[in-house]
Length: 496
Image (cartoon, rainbow, N blue to C red; front, side, top):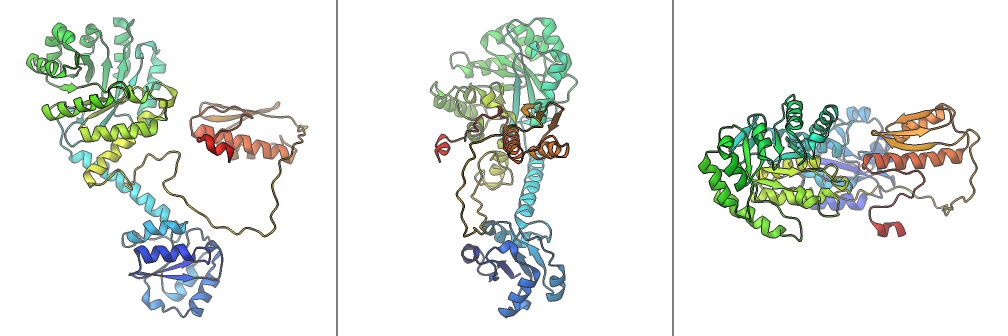
């Protein structure tokens, strides 16, 4: 199928470069007499086709810019060639054209959105299909662990016994909404039997696999046959209650004593523990991280039949950086080491969202391994704050340039001011007469205007700025303080 790509004068160069680079054998470019491609109309295109004497019999498809909103149905019927939307940005033709024979282009949805949707849907389907077909070492409540199955995310509720029942239920539901595969109940050192029984009863109402995490042997015994996994057992624990653990169907995580993990694994096997998981212990950066990675490699080579436990929180919680990249790289390393469980407590604020991040990266690594490619352009990504590539929209700039100047004067609105706060995932704008609550700056500001709670245009502009800052902070899970300068992520940009 030969494609005729329509563009305007300002995008002519980049469109022709892309076609020459990746589609010269099956695509041509037609430049209309308009600077901005989005302003091309059916009348303009019809005129250009005639003026350029285009032989339409050569083409099976005409791609117009994705930002065009005009209806080309009549022209399509007249020329007998399908007219469909290409990408919004000319640069994205680089990724659209090689997929042209696989896409059913739309007259309503731009190709970039269409392709993105398809890639995402296909990626999701592939993850489900591949996991269904994957081999494994054993299951916990139907969840596969080990071999070719996807790495699973285990998220810890630290000091779970300190929560009252309702709060613990909400915490579990929150972790499940983030996408966790399993939940770990951390037990505090001053907990008692009643505390442990309470949290075991609470989580038993959920179908998700769960573990209890304690150094107290009696609590491990209490959790056996109730919890799907028990954290953790060293030589002392194995000597004291190993026989009881061998009688349970719960998996047992084995940890080392003075780096002697092999001895403890062999002891657990000799005792008769049926489901063993090995934790060589991931050390923090500057505290032996590289050496601990070597341990993981050695244990994986020595015990192919045992899943590996990878405590990513040991590293991500002990470095002052955003968790996203740290989690991604660590999970990628874990995938190469053959680990089965990615563990995170999501304890500090800077690690908020780690469960979601690790679930995404586990799916990415799973797809990348099966597709035999780097974890890039998979249809699933973990790009949250940056963008993969610059998208330029070329717009006309008037010859009449006015330099912007800030107005230093300020008048109080006779109708009163607003106090803006964030709470429970919503924006609260409090006025002397009422509080407006919404999730977006637009909805809150539209309501303020419709309720006639503002009278000065500069007050409207101020509220628009502050409410948008609040919405951005809401989406980024950051604190918002009214009138505080919104600092860029990169300090050097504050000076630009």
